Length: 355
Ligand code: IPM
Ligand code: MG
Image 1 (cartoon, rainbow, N blue to C red):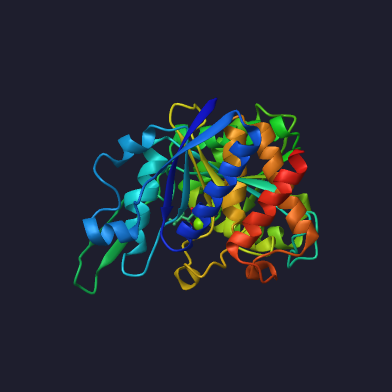
Image 2 (cartoon, rainbow, N blue to C red):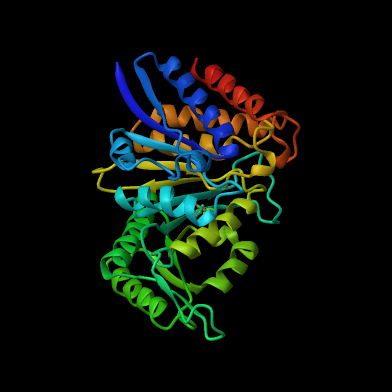
């Protein structure tokens, strides 16, 4: 029996709804396989936990979390707890401590999804830097309480951090047969960070003469996403730019509830963490209408990373089949189905396809 240990952090809001579906789907895959068993360990760390305990996770939280093959996270954030706390005290420490410096975010229009755009060929990946940049958390407040109050938010770009994400993107392009990499920049305005970012790209691209390199200013790139998404294959972006681009990317597929995200520790020294890119959506939490796709797709990425390729293929085939049938889908993508009805339809399709 192959044992896989998964730490679940449902978090807040619809995070709880969708992780329930992810767990159910993984259990179904294990049942189908017979020789596979997922051992789930659910951690209650969330904003609710914060309101009771005063912290997002216990002191030894990262130690507890490290002991697994992968982490599956729903979403964090809830009214009453400042967003900066839920991110800074839970999400970012995990990304940092486990050196998940790559955030892989595929943006792919699966058959049966309706893009609000004219183009029907949307299939690219955003390789987001996940450990530094604009999210470094450094800054200061000067002359507080005076009209001269000045708030400084810093961004940190290191040679090592920038080079490794660039290389990862180019290597990913080469590995997957993509012919081009676009680097998201803003070196016309950000005279230190993005000028450096461009210089590192120029240095790295020399090692990849087979890949066509481009840089685009982030403003122009957002327009390009909408106007010519079919030309995009791999995008490499800083932490903040990658964050913004991927909400746009998921919306290009018809809903923010669709896209997954893999916080990857490329060395395998620490567990990677998979999550939908959407937030906790408190307005629809517990109503049973959240789209489970972002999480199920995150499960698919997780399975692939764990080398459970046939399970990943089966899950993806179930997702595609249900989308293409156009019958059972959640309201955000034009249907009336509940979260669990959609998952159950995907699980049924997996059972059919496995035979
Ligand atoms: C994401 C989210 C987070 C981020 C928030 C919750 C801090 O938007 O994973 O895309 O910006 O990284
Ligand atoms: Mg985001």
